[in-house]
Amino acid sequence: MNEVKMNDDKILVSIQCLVYNHEPYLRQCLDGFVMQKTNFRFEAIVHDDASTDGSAAIIREYAEKYPDIIKPIYETENQYSKHDGSLTRIMNAACRGKYVAMCEGDDYWIDPLKLQKQVDFLECNPDYSMTCGRTILYSESKGKNIGENRCRHKTTTLRPKDIILKGGEYISTASILYRKNILEIYPTYCTNCYVGDYPLQIFCAMQGKVYYFDTKMCAYRTQNPNSWCGKMFNGKFTPQSEMKRKTLLNMLYNFSVHYQEYRSIFLSRLFFSLNINIPINKKDRKEYERFYKDYIKIFSLPWRLDFKIRKILPFPILRFYRKITNILLFHKYI
Image 1 (cartoon, rainbow, N blue to C red):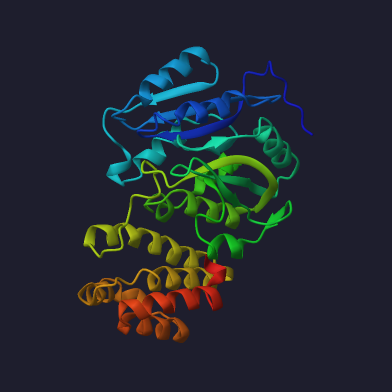
Image 2: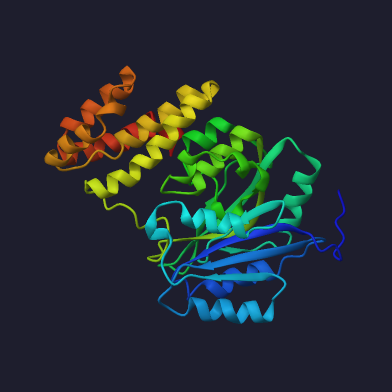
């Protein structure tokens, strides 16, 4: 292990914590930061995105109590709603660490040695770009743990194929720690994507190896009305929502161009993302096909056939068809 003395002024890890109306959960999140036991200095960049509840007051309280750790940013205008990459730029500019960890304000860490374990591994393994870990799933509506998110049932190196195909929920964002220097070449098709964690995970997998700790490190709060990831789409076709989704498809397509070794895998995920989101309403289905005609042109035969089937089936049968294909054919994507 490469020892880092506590009296060294250098910040080794920066934690990125995005907060918006997380007042009921925020103390638990911040407690997970300040309880970390490390032999190096770390900071938590806690960004309040113009919350309308008491989140900012809680951040101020912790910043006063733990000034060496909690570094607040208070916005008067919501940055996330701009969808122009400003939030990512603000957070990355504020981070001083060699490594970056992530945890949104409604999630929390449960392992006081999380950062130490991850940093020790990356310090000794320069060919790895990112680490992640096992995550508890906490149901906000039920008030209890309802399961776990486990990439594998052992501590091991993750396959890039799985990171691409299984989508952004394969790796829990709250468990991530990665090398900050990879962001020096971070492409715009990643920063322009309406989601931030999935393209980051893919890019880390393209720049090095990804290591998974099969130990419980953190908790992800599900069924939370204030969750960042649950707000985007209601299943109805609108040009506004589809423009956001298109940034995800553009990201996958550009990865397929720049990383030819994984081209077919990126395209498979792109095709899957299009097919599973075909609207229920027949009128919306026509608009959907028109909107994505350029992507549909490059469909391989099996995906084209699946698309046609989904497009013509009435909803009750389509719902059954989706269940069957998910079980028999598309289990590797979900």
